[in-house]
Image (cartoon, rainbow, N blue to C red; front, side, top):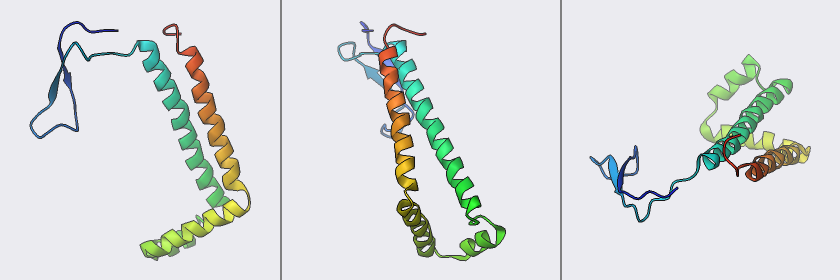
Length: 127
């Protein structure tokens, strides 16, 4: 959609102090169609779900391995930042050696490809 008159846009961040609006010239204004906005929202939705499921999987796996018991959590709370990083890296290294990280990456790639496939449906407006 092309805009033929100048209009104001409210921006919440990234502007100099005291400035909250920008005048956009009609010569440069290009707005995306609603179908493109819907497509972007669907892609983001799929990837947000994957992120939530990954977190849920990691917490469940840590619980299965006995790393989330009250005793282990108390030990971790007493660790310094450097020790926590080392502890976490050891877990990740072990999971990588077991092939778990590779499996998780394949799952992420599959979800990303699913989100990209939505692009073919993005044309033609809301569905």
